[in-house]
Length: 114
Image (tube, rainbow, N blue to C red; front, side, top):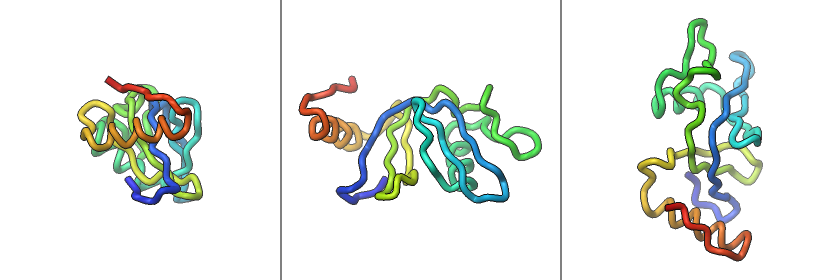
């Protein structure tokens, strides 16, 4: 996850992935928001993190894939491109605290995640 103050840490549920093999770009659908991303790197990261993502024919299984329904913290760069994600389950305390600080900064209230 990036360290720039422009970046925001968000939290959401992965609903699916869309992209075409040859384009190099795609998007990860997180809580209804399409988050642009690098296609091959994101698919490999989803596979490594959750498993059962890549289906026959090198397609992404958006029905039974291990990524579907997973709650994550994620960050984007200044252009809105996905920088990285971390599953909420097992997230380091420092990341949880950064998310909570960001929530206070945006809405003025403390949002507890536990």
